[in-house]
Image 1 (cartoon, rainbow, N blue to C red):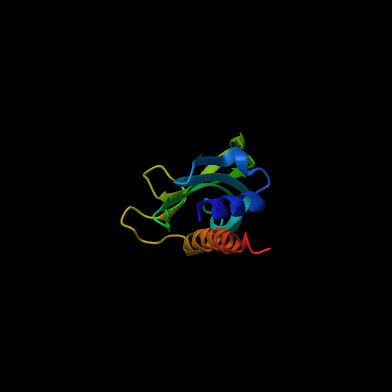
Image 2: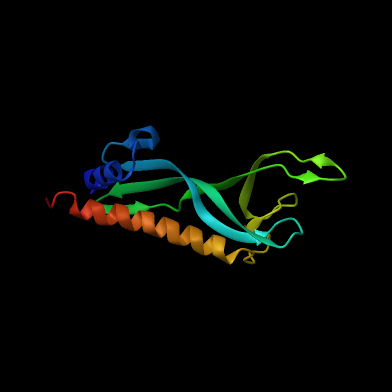
Length: 149
């Protein structure tokens, strides 16, 4: 199973060795980055709702023991680049990265959940679930077919 999953990952990613951390026969950790992988609709600072695409960096961990596989919950970060805008009263605002937080903190502008666990951005939560389920499904399907050529 270990070799099949490792081979599947190697066929799916353009440069997997750069993001792979392996313990031979025991674990595989894959770190990846995808641009504009997560579309999210949310308010734009009082100007209605906008559609934004967040870049997604993540780590998937696979553990192997006694012919079984365990996949840990992914560790991830969602970020997007924003351009500064012009306001007549204050001039140009700065450009930079903004992060979509999983749980909203006191200073966070956008988050998927509030402090009490209430879902704030349903499309972000479902988008992340769909994305990771799709990636894991592809890896598992490819790993089962890797030796069947």
